Length: 472
Image (cartoon, rainbow, N blue to C red; front, side, top):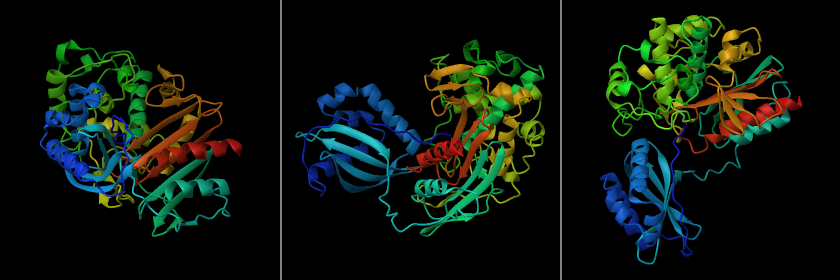
């Protein structure tokens, strides 16, 4: 799953403050928190200056605040930090499911003329963190070692990163762990992590398998394969689910993130809830445009299990994991027998694993870099029809990116095409990129939370290491 992205209208006026919280800021922030927690979004709108109301009308303001509440929950604590840009009172704000920076500026009439919400980044002293990654063992170059260290030193204690470097079809592994002020190499290529949305690539591989076996056609609508009719007889095709052009929202409307257990948000969303959504609440918007949807990928996995008359887990085991010798991979975390690395939240505390229930196709798989490297190497076999089909372009997102079945195609990172997907859950982040022409690839699994404000370093590291392989 993708990390929480929260906005922000930024309207800056030239005011000057010191670094002590002013009374007016304190009063406005307290009223904002009270109204937010009481779902009184109209009251918050009434606190806006006219310029703010014009830029962020009531409907948009309410939509933003509702979205924030659904993703992060209520505010449980607020701590003044400083004034930013001489205008914004910045608060470290603890929500039920995230720690965010709430920035509020006010005008001379004590009205809000600027509002900005973003992930809170703790000012951490990394000067004393020690790089204990050896380069004399041939696993990584000095450049790669320094790149790994610089991108991971900010993470909490007990963070683990597991990396597979695939260079011209040859694989080497490197694992690291942050222990106190030292980042050291460990052997964790067989350690198991949640891979999050990289699961979508495997769901699309099941789709490709069904197409190659002539059980379905890529452009078939899923309607005839489901026992329940879709609301309004809306038509949704297999390919549209796989490349996120179905028009389905990111999540179903009857999965309320504000009321579920934030530590395991998908667990209770089962077949009954999905059927109810499809028959009574289904809404399509912007069909034919790219609109990333966890619901769509989950529905794809669910429909394929109906086509094949088997469970999603069994399909993965029988058609993919066994075929590519992925012995430590499963879509059911309760079946894990090996070393499951505990997920961490952004503060470094252990968190429960996520269970995706009926939406398993969106992000339920746990795996190892060793297993995923086997899957990556299979992509370089030109005779593999299933995998080749998953890498066939089906839609252009923009000038820099296309999409196929599951994979995103990056067109501007290299002279060659890079096939890429990432993933993120409450306790884990992952990234995987391959180049079938050069037979290069990078796979990174970690117990860095998708909600960690520095989660983007995993992506930065993945692409950075991929570029170093082009030099070798």
